[in-house]
Length: 502
Image (tube, rainbow, N blue to C red):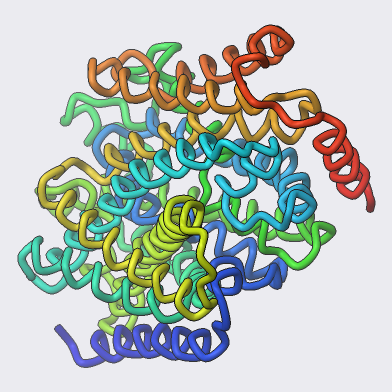
């Protein structure tokens, strides 16, 4: 590989280390390590939320799916864009205000316990377990993507590439905490945006279209491959399309994304963050879709059959661009992977620390010791996820899909109802989480994902359970130790008033 390529990659890692070092010097205690004292600006909030959201799926999974099957996979991108906008519109502001009103909560389990004044700690434990189980799986998808990237560009064995990915992410997450994660995510989000615009444009002009048109070429090679790449309804059923659009529901329950809303310095800046974030996302997804479609034509024209469709974005960059820009492309792919991994590792570590260890350990512990334990948790979770990446060798999109559905169904409806239903109870929140997550697990175990994506039945069942339990709360409430409602109602009214403040 050319020296210019290594130079670009070296600069990228130097910036990550620099950010981690600066952030490490500022970390004083656990709350700052996990939420940076709610000091993010709208630009960093938007880009870090986008980068931590999209992961390797945006540069590997989606282009690969389009390359293989065409526009029948575009429904995911449409559903995600709508879902992200709704997440900013209906959840972000209320959650930012409510987490501060409810005893300054810094994690989702923290918020649920404080929102419902649950003294039994059952809500905290169950939500913490959901985070621990699904994020450990989710992080493994990033490790798989990292292993593929190092293998494709450097010729390294998959196992070595996966281990390198883990080590790099653990390093700056361990030292820098939330501040480092958000700053690196914003930087990496800008890199991702650059290459998602650069590659499809460059690849398009590299096509041989002298005696034909792009769309005719897509149709020609699609016929050879017995596919209809330009038909978004090809090989799709109504339930299939509905399931792909339902990916957007997952946003309401992704702790590593919504924690950015909790950390912005003012809820009034969330509208600006939404405009930046949705523009970044829409153009980025368009670039990913175009890369897959253009890559399909380009490699067919060259007579090249890719062994792994999910490397189409990488191979376009490696084939068509100057070595220095190839280095930028590599760093962008790594950025997509690492930004999500670091966010998820930090959220999981925060859950282990706050929702398990210190929730039951009553003795006073110094802020320095709390932060150290959180850092050790980062390493522990990373090791387990790396092992899962070796065992669970699925596609990136497949692993992400399972984890995304798990969070969306477990937390999505629960959080929305907790922000809009004044009389929602701790019992309905608990049963909503368990039923939603349980349906997703059963759907996966019985291989029903081919019928409809598991988040749809999971989210529906969770919502239905919450509505029914809320309706019959007077009877079911006797099963729980419910606190006096006036405190909960006062906090809800305070949240609502502050959320409506322009």
